Image (cartoon, rainbow, N blue to C red; front, side, top):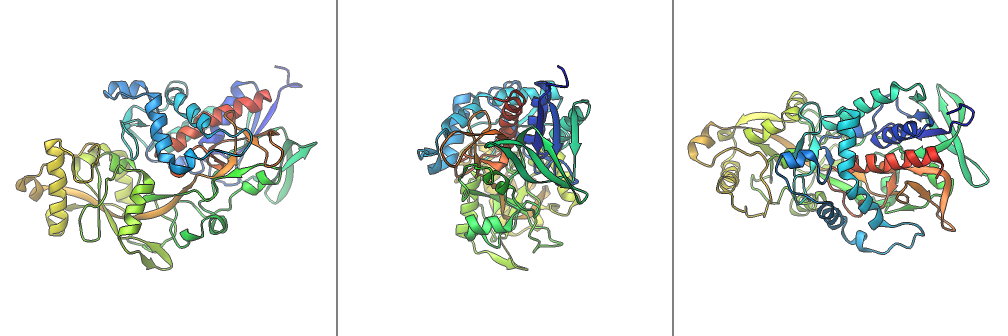
Length: 472
């Protein structure tokens, strides 16, 4: 392709959505500039710990898991709640079509990452709200870091790729109603770039001001997100439609660091810890919930049943996450880090309260018998501890304190299935503008299933990058 006619695509954000868009645009023949306001790349994607969903993958087949795209669609729609069932009044917006694309292209997304990009995604686990095990991760480092770093290396190998970190996009440029580029600052100097734009700058779960505007009831809750402003104003300034902005996900398990219990920023206790068999215990030591229910349901069970405590202005709860040796071994790639950080500690089960021991024994008995537990938990992961007195007396378990945390924002820019940003007034799309990832809204409804964030980033990141490169 002649450089004179080579299209230019500008990607804003270096999380998985932005990286996927950049890769797709390069493959479609574009020159790509990727900008991120942070000196550290990867966004929230690099911290993802549970994995990416896929229905009908070789890894599922190898594990004996039977899954279909229809079943995945139904699980996602069910998780989305009432908002998913509400008809949209936004011209061009189709929530069902978005989830259809998400589910039908999920296996291809996993295959693309594993076969083309070279990421190990051979392990599958069942997370909350899923009917079967479909969340993929590797056997080594956590999946977010593995995916982001591998994909970033692939991008850097291209002569048509330029990476600009610490580059803060201040506005989207327009001409005759179409987006034609970006203005940004870097090293206190103002710059402009011309080209079609993909915004993949993430959500607003770290923006206290936006959270106060859209969800004031969440004031005081800790977050897994670094404090930073949302970038949605960039989109509304060029006429983009926002939706679902009051839909904010509370993740049930953020670690409370015993060294700094009142810290507002928390490390996420990845959902795979429960998926592999971990259980949640109340302040008195009893189980109280199906740990594999949706994030919304588990968070509600905690917040409704037990009083919160105020620690240095942070509103949080005192819930215990416990893993037996089997669950811990299955999550070994994560456990070492959490233990090193002081977030999990190994203890003799016999040294814990009688209530905790009794709860563990009852759960172990259900696992051992292959029966349904009192909370209708659908799967027990890799729990191995037996319920007999000798096994319990000898057992070492991992425990850590967790609390519900602000984790993810389901609302954002309205898009069509190609990632084109929809207008707030008059219908149609904003020409020259695409978006993908957490900065968009509509895919998840009232609750996001674990593993659907990375999947959304790939499916709609690739779609947006391809569309921007082609201009359609």
